[in-house]
Image 1 (cartoon, helix red, strand yellow):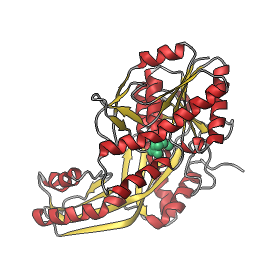
Image 2: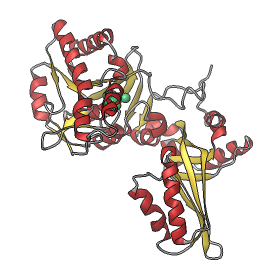
Image 3: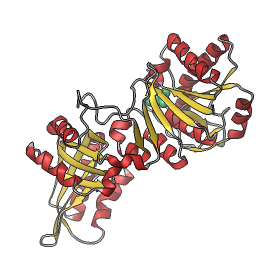
Length: 406
Ligand code: ASP
Ligand code: MG
């Protein structure tokens, strides 16, 4: 018995029948003696539909108004679930973000939670009410409705779980957990029982499809145990928790890939103070996130500098750098969109040497050229040609002993 936060994603509340299944699951948890707080997403496709409508009226709708509109998706499901629970004779109360005192900053469309007024919710829960909170939304200190960015209900759930000091935050979704690799690419990928916050954060490209990555940062900061599981089965999913001793036996926990990468190289830039700042400041000012950067060793006072950006920002980044190149006297700017990033991730790497060499040798055996490398304490990433992505994931999955045995 304890306090459990249960979050259900859009595909789990896509229609009344599914909302009824959700209600049954919530009721079961409640009947076991737990206090339950439910966080809901909008019905699958609804948020997209609302955005479509708004952009039919105006190319760039006022962000404040768009948030008022988008928040209705979660308002609908929260009310419908409370009505369903009431009809089943359970005391349930639906609440919008501002009623649940989810206070955010005022960046409409991508707001960050500043605080949650927990006392109010605790009061209601103590009276054995089931609270159903509309996810994804909050309000700023002026009372404006805000939303937390796509997939933001996960963050609502983790934030409320941490504010209420819940025993567990369950994220119910349409997959049965986090996998050692994308099962669409690697058929031997298997479900991970337990993974650390840091590994999950490093798995952004794999994990972000399942959990809004911001929610994982939140969970780590406040040490909220998160259970990612399917709303269509009773099976256990993946526990995302703080690192423990039991995790160290595996050197690599997952292999991820990310095709959303493009590379830009500035040829023969002067190797002198201030040049990197000139290259990257306008990129940052344009809101483009740079991932990897490498600078070659100096030859005749000049060096080549290569970095990666998301594919969608490639064109803009190229235009910016062509201007910069002229300014700083770089000889050429080259771009390449046909690249991908393949990474191996694992907290066990901290205590093992040789992981990088196994990775490089394995790729070499397949004749896959490594274009760039970056490493952190628990991750090694290589940029390779995009066409080798699937092959690279599969051979790395095998060499690090992650294959599902059949
Ligand atoms: N409904 C919102 C979205 O589609 C938030 C969420 O589902 O988490 O992004
Ligand atoms: Mg989601």
